[in-house]
Image (tube, rainbow, N blue to C red):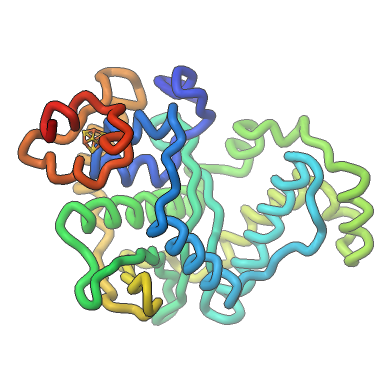
Length: 291
Ligand code: SF4
């Protein structure tokens, strides 16, 4: 597993959101890894909308985790429930996914998976203040990168380029032990003894991926108005492997430490106006552009 700049940033993996955000400002991604960004009202509303959407179809494991291995188990269990919902009801939300790009562990959470015409479609839900037409070109690139990276990771699992063994080793599953309290809770809700085991639940999760309908080349980016929560636009794009590869090749030069993080150019400095690191005067580039 490659570390590149991750050790310096005190991170164990690259997130899909990090990769998407590189299309907005890579230097901002770098700063966000070392200094927590203050949550804005828009972010809080976005989180609430996602949480409400999740509740509509998500089946939560009702046993409270105590330790990190318990949380790891809970995530795998809930992923299996989500995939069962997709197979049985044609829809699932908040699927946590892990993969590998260029030797780095990549983690993310897919907003929604829909079955349409016998294929599984990845959907990204985004919030906007607009009442119609939810994006500009830069936003559209970010959201397209995000949806396409999920599609890439998903296909890697289905085609066994990202395997259970890789997942097991990368996360040290063999060393994880469930807490006695959590085991007791799992027994109480009737989980079979042979499934009260982190390796077994993770293997079952990988098997569940294979039961899903074929993954589609179509990806949906859905824009929801932040106030009304109504869908204002739904954009359908096609997975474009060559376009994505070009972007990822460039992005991973940064994660591989082959070059430093790049700020936005002077022409794009309008993006600095809404930037938290400009607001707290922590970005020398934003200050040089906007004063
Ligand atoms: S102020 Fe501008 S250049 Fe600096 S991190 Fe923010 S968006 Fe990037």
